[in-house]
Length: 308
Length: 284
Image (cartoon, rainbow over all chains, first blue to last red; front, side, top):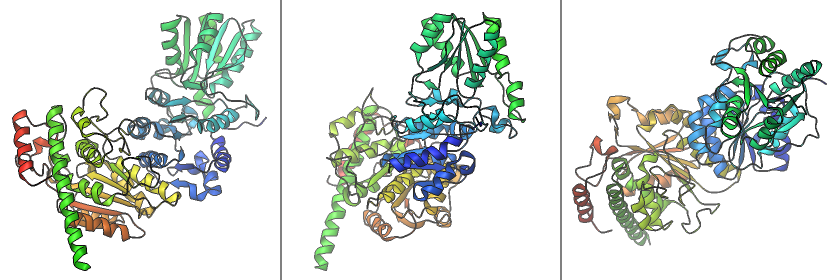
């Protein structure tokens, strides 16, 4: 099956949703082609607003639209949506608990050649810490579609983190997305690999590699980072007794942190975190960057072997 | 008939002035009772809010969610007392609640919270965001083909925020003629005079150049304020900016043009003096 980027789901899904819901509007900040909201703009020109290079304004205009009964989806890149407009997200959208669904693309280091200025390694941490905000990181195109669709009916703000790099499909068009519920996609008994976003694919590959060595790895897709599916994680950790987290994000404040917070309070378990260290990204091809920052299936395998 | 109209207009102006006095009295009492808050920038906007809430706004205090209502956004959220006083006087909630300003879990939070207090159209406090929000509201109302208009009060110090100018360009681009901004131009901010810190002058030329219909008024002259609102209502194809020259602390002699009363409450003795002064200034 052809690889597709999670961002490709945005424009297409918005068109479908807009056909069903008259009160859906979308905004972007001069990145409509990259985020794919330009598809929505062509289909519904009256319900799309390009604010130009002004992410803070986009965020607050969306808030104003939301007060008139609109459900607003916003584009832009993750680094700008969460960072440049952080105060607008915090003080205007989240504080007022408004129906704005932030769907930034180009998250993580797989942005590639644009380099560290454009690679958001801390956006999950920022968004997780904001009250009222929900955080979803889809693993593939189909999960992205489903999450974007589900966000329409989730009250208040939602942050859906999308990527630029095409990834292999894990799910299909019949996938049923349950917000807030982690998905066990492979049963195992020796170790739990909890992954989010594009690292879910790597986790599945790692599980295959481990199986060859008679290590049985459970793989759980933690697509919703907030609210975290604590019971599913605790259950898997209790069964296997060892947990490895994997995310294309800093190990500070992301999935690894959330799982560490949960386990250390409720059920101390051996834990290793795969993620980006406390550093910025750099230019390079996506595959080179995944390797440089230790985000490959091989890195997960090594972490598992060391842990158990 | 014309004479009757003039008499009616004069009565309307007198009635708005009375409301403004009541609002000023409430501001001083609220901030004095709370022991903290922002009296200066609240007092400077009292005549503008009185003109809005008791003349211009099409609203239903007993039905705050009425779809066709006009909206008011207090972008300079620290002036919460003037908004709360206008809302209470309009009947959105009891005046008694005003004395809970800034208390634990009060509906009258230090800065306006739309999720707590009826009549507050947007939670504000972090400066520079209300104009963008108001532009979004104006867009949404236009999409729904509603006649509602959106009013937003911004501060002069607040105009140093870059987002104000992002919003300014956007509102002009979208030709939001259902949007009216009012600049409370008292030339004082926490650290001193706006013109000494980072000047926003020439404000009129800036807003004109950014594509807005600009009307300059004395922000304490009620007839000028309501005439400007009328003119804004007939402007097509562009948003309107009312540049309102104001006096920070207006109505309390020892607070007028005093930068220290930006964010300082009067002492008990000062509060009594201020209330007496407002009471002596005319009927409520």
